[in-house]
Image (cartoon, rainbow, N blue to C red; front, side, top):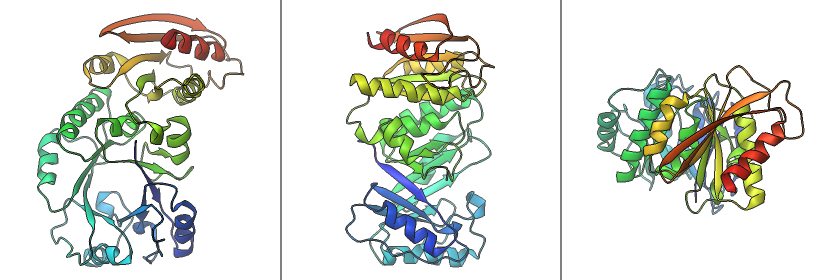
Length: 335
């Protein structure tokens, strides 16, 4: 089962409190972004709701919104367990580690919005040596080759010890969907239309499109790709997942928007994850697939790739009806 951590943020105490009351007991973990508040006021956390609460007060240097004195920020984090938080996020570069007086699990985090450092292994090992319980490393792979390096690192690092390793950006969303199957302790999700990190997706998508909380074992994996960031990758992945659900298939389709498949496919072939197939959409055809009951504006060329017993095969087909793409693909992969 994949644990979800829902990020909640508001600029005022009343708004944050309402959100907590709305979602408490509905997700395993709620991250409360205290740094979004104009004045930090601790919310009243429900007791015995079944939800664990993670306190985050992210400074600007790590991509957050807190601009006050560092000593005041660290005091907020120190007090958080006394206010009912069982988890606290402490950045990797904090020298004066808070002296917690109540039981708490500490996430040591590092965020790089500018790119992906070359020495991921060294950085991760250094963070594992810091005081705390769990390491969270978030980077921004800008190219497919770097994304592949990140995924390969995730497979190696998370197989040895649990942690949280994520990529930011549309192309790196795959790390958030597949990361739990590689060993991520949880994956972060947002409220609908209130994304707080690049590439983050909503709780509704996590539950109803990707069915993440339902998986007890790793499903067969099918990627929907387009090198130019075609948004139809999301539409088609959702439609395929709806078809898989109807069939009762243990299969998960996910978008690979902006990913170069010639670079990604060798990784897929060597990965321990059960990649079974991919659809690659023709670049420059954005918004051609708008739903299974609507007609495409023009024909859509796709390349369909299948892995069978370690052997890769591919074929190119042209469709006019987007519903035909979905039906034909499901029959081809599941037949």
